[in-house]
Image (cartoon, rainbow, N blue to C red; front, side, top):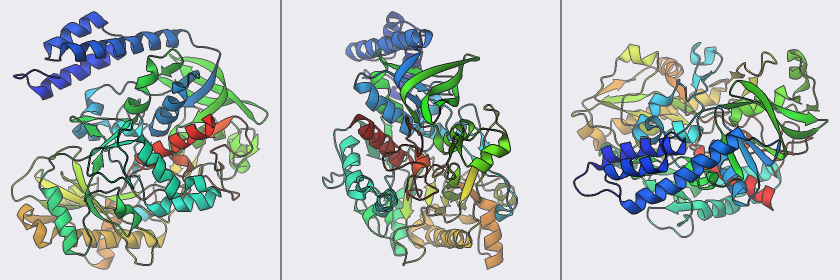
Length: 574
């Protein structure tokens, strides 16, 4: 794309900004062409970008100013599930309205893979915080969720982790629907992927819309960690999503959604290609309030746009607002536990006791830290190597997923206590099969008030036991001979007594930002959706986000949420 002699990184940054301005209608095609060519972009590339971006901008501007009264589908949320299902539905020519509370994703803080931490607790984060609990020493753990086009796929760490075989076989058993089994889910992953790593025809796809690559040119500390894992009996694999996740686990470099040094969020793969079509409207800065209900039938959505309350009707509404805001909308609309609805003064239309219950998130400990002998700069998304392993050999799959983070990663308690130096790296113990269960609840019927989260992190004694086990395992790996070239000293936690290590775990515990499971799929009385993702007792309403997981997947949740969006689209279009 760029002529020799230009600085590709600087030119790419400028072109990103120009493309964003074009999509948002801030500059016209002619001016875009002039400026794009000045960055060194080829004429053919500039023309293609100008045509596509200009068409999309004009179409979206017109659609936003001329909202229809009704659509075939309304999708609430443009995150990993919402963007996927909206894009798939839009390809058919159906009229689709996508409501997104946040703003554009075409900004440096999203597109630059290394800048993801700057999105947390800022304007692109809903700012949720878990209730304080003595199980984490009275701390209130932050629960970042994306409030931007792309949701979590725009603000989190770009890891493509598909989940363990046993996750999906468990889902299929819960739903009583073999379409959710690993063998069937694997076919979806193969269909959508454009895998850039070592070919694996049995497990990986090529030529699909979802670009996935292994981290490129990793920091040497990352492959060293794989060798260190092997030294303690954890096998290393070439692909974190291959045969490793059909077995007991292992160590691998990360699969990421990064292309040419830029983040590739889910809307870029699914939603942007249909924005220039007149049938799809992406309405940003728009917060959904409640569902339009007629009896027990969902007829549309009430929402606030440009400070005004508006509404639109649809043949089908798809909730993809995430595991906190999806149950919030259901409860505000009279769908949820009757006792909870009575408490906040909302008339119960459908008594569904499972709405908001079963909250899960992966625990990530911040962290086990070592000072470099000679500091090395982080690469890619700052996190390039991980491993999955069992804390107990009797388990049916890995329950631990530590991640190596190439900067010092500590909490508001452990940071001041240990004062890690800037030139340090972290091995963060992770718990990905938590037994603790929390809940999402409301304190009032005010749609503008945030939902509350009683997360109950580490409330189950087995979770604390597993986290302590993971800390000790990470210390063994970090202090092994394989890591000695990268270690001047262990910064934290060091050797501690069992009681001290439990206290450290409570002070160091955080989350992976993988909120899920609050509207679970299943057949028992606490289930919210069936195997077709339809809400029990409600006509015209589908859920397509991580809230439908009966149990959180083993690993980062972007990939399985995309798969959920694909399943939702397959079901709706069947």
